[in-house]
Image 1: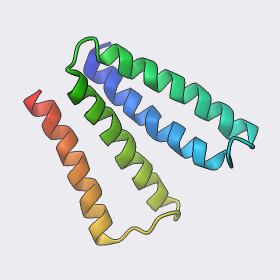
Image 2: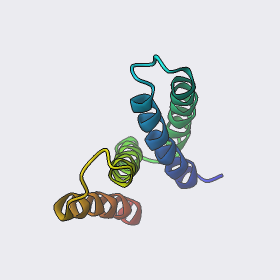
Image 3: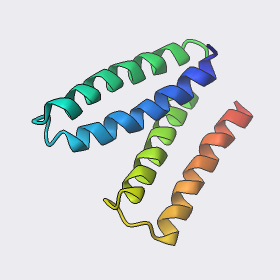
Length: 105
């Protein structure tokens, strides 16, 4: 699998582990805590792999950007965060920046 593909999948897993961490109630709920631990480890391993072929700053920014955008989107969809037009616009801007890093990288 290519470095960019692994990086994108790792960014998706970042959103999964962030959401699982929130659902774990301070790691007191075992199922979300295990989901957090496993997906965090796999996500970081994927980031590490991608950094062998991509510039560190670009890889990290893309990984964080994907994870942050998906985490906020999930929180909006589940009603944990408000989905105001400005917040949606800002998340779309973040996605645009991630795409821009891929295009110029």
